Length: 314
Image (cartoon, rainbow, N blue to C red; front, side, top):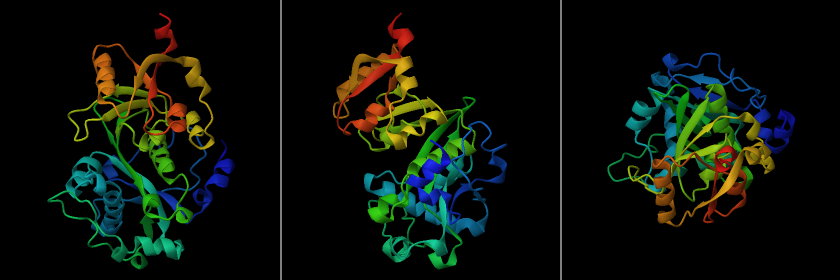
């Protein structure tokens, strides 16, 4: 998919009124950003902001607001100290932001501080939405956030958080593809070679995360997590597969390299997760999921487990 094709689906990506942002302390600045993955999907230079600079607190508060509205109802909203200690200090925060003056009145109304009410915040957690700066006093307003943190394993980063304002907006005001493009931008800009992450079985997020590279299941069940029915995955980042998220086409290279096994995952059956987890722990893998199958199936439907054909044929 060429950039022009993308613009037809997402005219906002071409607008200079919406640009990517990079919210990262200077010591964590990416060297030679965008050098590893060749793509023309991001035509505008990012807005650079330093999270350790006090004057950027209003931008940070808006990031908090998006995150809390997205994850508060599921009791997974991120405390401020986690954002600072676990994201800003070791990692990299990116997304897209809009010129405040260019936002439609209906969007401004939704994002107005008086209309953003904290809901579902965990007991003892201070809501992040009480001191939001007026949009009229801001130059750029964040519309999404993607947090990615480097690990001790060279070349591997952990995708920690991804969300956007689309969940707050009426359908006619949403920015098509905003969530997908936010993670894509972060992976591209930071030259991420291998991305790991976590999401819950049956979550709509799995439809998105499975399109950045062939998704290997490295954990099918996570009792250490607060939501034990969590899938832990990793993928080698391949920009060639990104277009399939929008076109819904088959990933033919995946089908050439991987075959379906007899194993399945049932998002509504914990026993199936435990069975696959035991197979992983017994070194029976690697095991993969098909992005196309995830995209086509209802969220509660069973998913096939794939393995490399060379392993199936051995």
